[in-house]
Image (cartoon, rainbow, N blue to C red):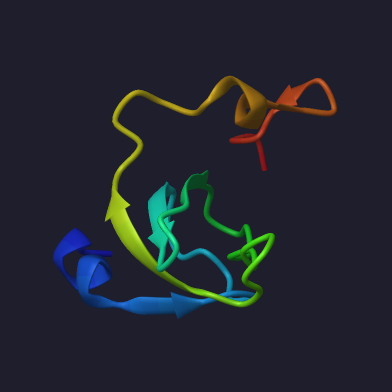
Length: 75
């Protein structure tokens, strides 16, 4: 999937994340999300719209690396 296309697309809370990357919402929240995750609602503002900000340049944050003792990339 091309990042130029992703940068122009708007995703809504509840939709599935198409590719690993950093995404931002209308309220300034920025999250590292993995393909298959779902875009979350904002904790205070509710459902939001999300845009692709870029690839995960420095890798995954520590809290995303391990799930149940295994790396999240293992599927």
